[in-house]
Image (tube, rainbow, N blue to C red; front, side, top):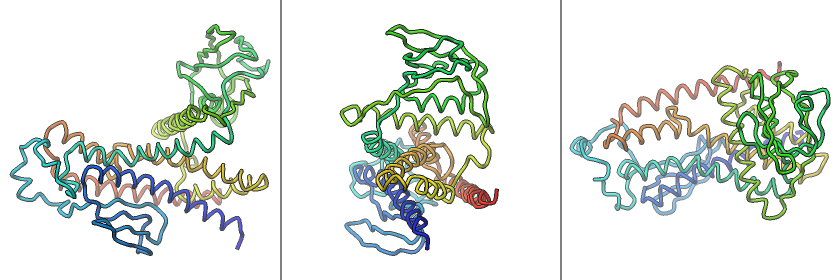
Length: 367
């Protein structure tokens, strides 16, 4: 068997396991902090390979390294028991939030909001920690212009070497990657660019040149390397995560508005392809370079998982938060059957979408 293929599988499992453990670990830690009983903390899907019980919680690793779950003690998920009917008109604050090892449904609404919110937030925190590693060893690239192509709009507008780009169309930029991102997603006819020259702020308006698939150029390049093997690492790791958050939000907006095609979307198989390609293209530079790139991919995926889970869609954390926010506002729970039906429909749609993405990942081999 090809050694590269083995490393791809190992890297894929490690990256996804790390992201899932962090996400579900966020739910677990905040649940326990609020006295909510966790029946099972599991990594993977399918039959159990390893499992043990500590306290009230069973910990397990399952056969297929996709996903995971933090399962709460709430056996009456589909039923409204008599107590709930009697307390239907009571505010959530009347629940005995001091009780330990309570079921998820017994906890106060804000404890449940914090528990659900924790998964995506822990993914963002994981991305920051991974960013510390990447940025420390690789540094960052700032926005000071090194050279300007005389045949492109930036030169005609008056931008010169040494100018520091600070805003494009009112959007603050700290990294050159943010400028690259804008060239791929901003379809405005004219761009307003703010930059600093010798401490003075200046603003110009130019029309970028469209070149190839979605790429729009203004004709600048940079060599503004920022060494982050010092205390700067904390600032620039945050800016790196900020960049990936912006990239994720902008990509989602393009997806919703139809500006992305099906080959711009990838599922697990597609990500395995990305990992395989990255290993192939970087292994000649040494193991450490491969590791840096794998960490960078994990950073990207952790941000993506965090944001995607916050979308207000049924079966996702964001969908559950919608019901919890409604409860917090009106002072009583949404009927559990109604919520369960909505989430069940969401799960069906997610399964269908996952199958479509999987089919697209596989057929991409032949296109």
